[in-house]
Amino acid sequence: KSYSEIEVEFSHNINCLVGNNGVGKTNLLDAIYYLSFSKSYFNSLDNQNIKYNEPYFAIHGNYIFSEQSEIQQFSCIQKRGQSKQIKHNKKLYSRISDHIGKIPLVMVSPYDHELIQGGSEIRRKFLDGVISQTDNLYLEQLLQYQKALEQRNKLLKTFYEDRYFDETILSLWDEQLVRLGQPIYEKRKIFLESFCPIFNSYYSMISAIEEPVFIEYDSQIHNCNYATLLRETWTKDAYTQYTTIGIHKDDLNFKIGEELFMVKKFGSQGQQKTFVLALKLAQFEYIAKNKKLKPILLLDDVFDKLDMVRVRQLIHLVGKECFGQVFLTDTQQGRVEEIFTDSVIEHKIFTVEKDKIAVQ
Image 1: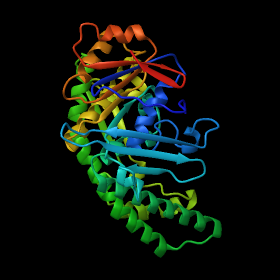
Image 2: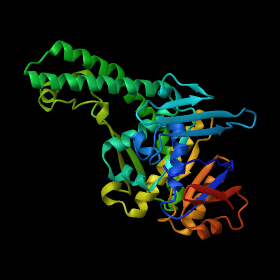
Image 3: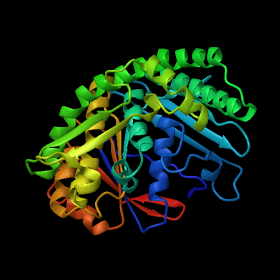
């Protein structure tokens, strides 16, 4: 949205994008995000991400996944009023979902506070996003489940509008939700068993305070027969015109302290920020371990509410060999330069102005 045309060669380690607010630092990160997920982190409407008065956007990225590997080119092209194109080495994907997981990436943004304060849909999106980058079958099951759920909800609306009810047809869609939803539920449980210890470790590392933290998986189908639950809510679903029971209602409860209070209600601003940052770094490590490939890490404006001690701690952490390519944005060049004083971490600092970027 900010650049007519630009080409940048980045450091394989840490890249710092420095500039005033509104010059396009975040849009540059979003372009990198686009190449991983074929969508924006901030705006789901692709046409609104095209630069004003321009007919299209095109993002091309050259990637090297290991020292021995050849350059791989990925492209995302969106023309106004047309379908989006995702290409690998100039070859068009038949399904965009086949691309997910090819370029693992983790984004940390000021908007991530919604993981704590927002509704259950945001936490499910986080949960599904992590698993989908490491398990293509999970993503396929999730997409099929969402289609089946949409069809069941359409059927319930038709029942309501036409004042009739067909148990036989509804039970067929119940079977689809159970067939697809049960393995999704099981994979979410298994994922959290592996993820929570990693999260706890990062929370302790960042906070430097020993306090218990806990992620609780909240699902309506815990210890229940999924099909029976759906059958028992037929009357309620027919009245509300949507499916009130299922894994599409799952949530994560974030808790803290000896009494395991909800972070959303009782956590301080610092505790909430640390909780979210630990979630994202744990996401990074989980994907890296399961993909055997270090994700790209994007840190958008995360330093404004962190003191310099924690900023240095974070940079030291992501500068280690266990991390790969990192991109961060900041408005204060002096702060960025201070972070790397007496540091041997390889990095590049880029000055970003409207429609252009220059390396220092």
